[in-house]
Image (tube, rainbow over all chains, first blue to last red; front, side):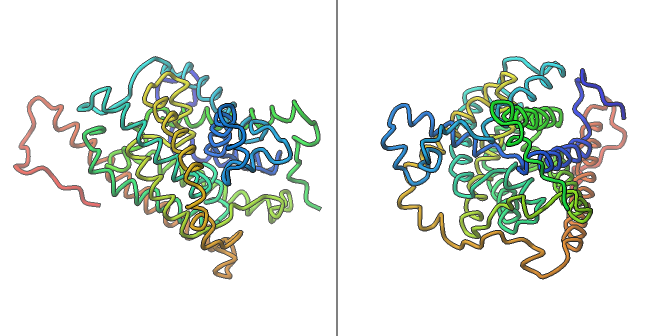
Length: 174
Length: 217
């Protein structure tokens, strides 16, 4: 299978998975750290609440660690990683001809329904990722690959929760 | 003597050190988009048993990482004790995973894929990210009453080899078996939907069965 950068077809999923695993191994070798997305989103959120309510944010039990020793919440490896993730995704999308304004949804769903459910789903994912201390990248791929028991519990619970809720939102997707 | 990790970010210092992480993130984001995960329809399709890209990518990545870390550790190229294994909190991760899973199928993304979707001007990805920020802020607001549960059932750096007292090779083998069974099931389901699509696209279907064929996992 040829690998082309200007490719309108997606790549073979096994190939993408193996490449992702190699990227994490490379990150381990170079930096001693893996990957993760929700941690950076939490720091962005705390940075935002700090603009509005600095005292509250620095005293909050969940956010105060981001400001420990007068640290800037965005001066952290996960945030730099997220910047790279955005750039990499953008470059791939442009090369693949997939960068255009649209609302991706199933054949039976309207734009309003899709946007509302995307927002609602984001809220739940934010709560879940904070409670589990990570999301599908940091917990799922890195923790799963390092054979962490909690990471596998999280991963299995994500699929269980997804399957349990799938029927109720089928109009959005099928 | 082991050679890795190099801690390159400390060797070259800031701000260049940040670029190492930007570069790793670039590869991560590029691969997520190439895998089809800038489009939530490709992500949730596994929950309707239609398209198994998500488990194929996830489990291939996990197996590669497991085997690679094991190999590099055995060859003493990488000092695995210098890598932080995500710690375990049994109940918070179980409940957090379920809630995250609800959000996954309702919203169509996970945090990393939503970023890749939003930068390619998918408004649903952007709406998901807005919700994510609200959810994270909401969790912080509700943190005090939740703190006891959040910190409950802590097990530290609990891994399967340590917990079961077995060689990591056995865990790798078990994970590979699990993944290959899942891949096999996924391929059969994908073939079923492809046949169904071909049958409905055919203008003169030859001897269509009276009742639609049920999926046989």
